[in-house]
Image (cartoon, rainbow, N blue to C red; front, side, top):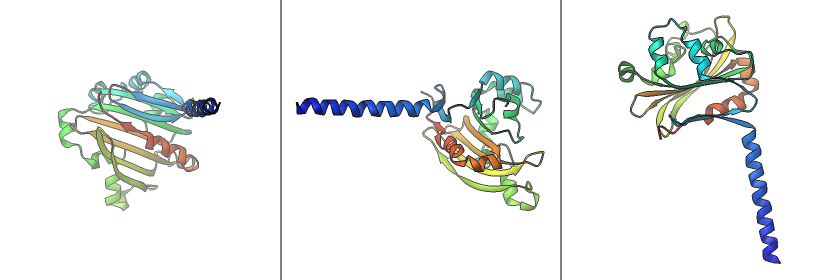
Length: 219
């Protein structure tokens, strides 16, 4: 009888544990690319912008080498709190409504592979290093919140969190992780962006997205 009670007790504990795990999983979106071994966790309810939509928007870019960079993209995907956010808005630097998360994995060409450094990773979307070296020329609302080395199983680089003013003068906070593969042939990028007021209000949730960014590498 005691053995039966123990088995029932263990069964209830296991059932509860499985229920708790399932409930936790259902409250999150797992964005992943098995090919590059890259994944992150997004709060459930966010809206997905697909790789195809992002590629279509990026194909219209007139920036130097834009077509080559797009051709070398292994994976890209975006998520937003607002269903109104488009792929084009994900790819520009205007402060979005709500928050936007953008993940990108891209192979580097020979020239990029030879020249890339922690500074170039840090300066991925804004000249952060220059702003730090010469504050008189910095963006008017630039504030460096955090900047540190990030090491993953298959890559390492820099995570930088800062605020700056977009073209409209709106203060925007960016949580940027840029990692380089050990063989220097691939870059892994995660951007979490929001108006500073929104970011400050939801800081724990947004930081958790950046914390979840994981690079295991090719299988």
